[in-house]
Image (cartoon, rainbow, N blue to C red; front, side, top):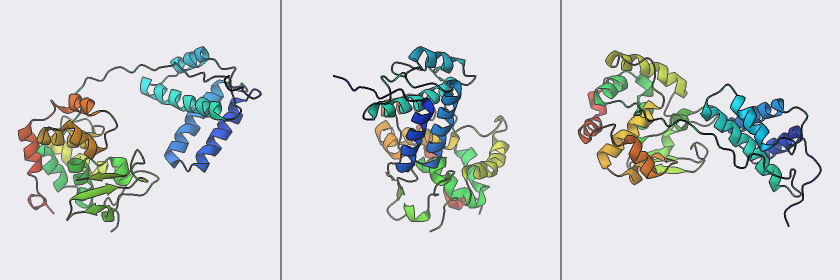
Length: 277
């Protein structure tokens, strides 16, 4: 026999309980804000209604009508699905069913090559980044994510996390994107947050790449993935080092044709002594 739901629960009451649980679990502020925003939109779309009154078809119609990209719709669905799953997990359940079950948001396949930088461009950029050079180098050569290096609303990566003798970088769980500590082969490394170093890196990059219209999204991490894959030829090893959340086969398919081994070796040959102080 399945769980019997309690009396009809309003969407607003469910959201309140779900958010209080988030506070108790000490969710990251950014994660909490994500749920607060998405579930606030859900509540506004169905004012005064109960969880059970909002059917799967009504959620589908609402999502399809949002004037946003498919990826943003997907995030909204994920938040509402989490609300219903939490409500169903209560004893007794707060709703008879998860109205999001079976819903999918199809995203168009992005078959464009990811933007990457090569040795000449990296050399010009690193030579002009001043106090940000160490942070940018770690993003390029080790694939540290910008939000792990110096993200908003959380601790920045610190020099105590870098063991130069052992050639190891430890990304603590409270800094890592997935909250799982990661090891890659004092004071903050980056003096500012991610938006600040982009402003420093972009002008010297545009001097050697005038065709760029702005800072390519995730270009340093894309460069790291391309460079390491071309250099090592081992997608599994690259995925482990980068903390890649997908399968190594997906990483291999996305980056295998973006850089030759000779181009990767030219990046690996860059040394601080060759760069302007």
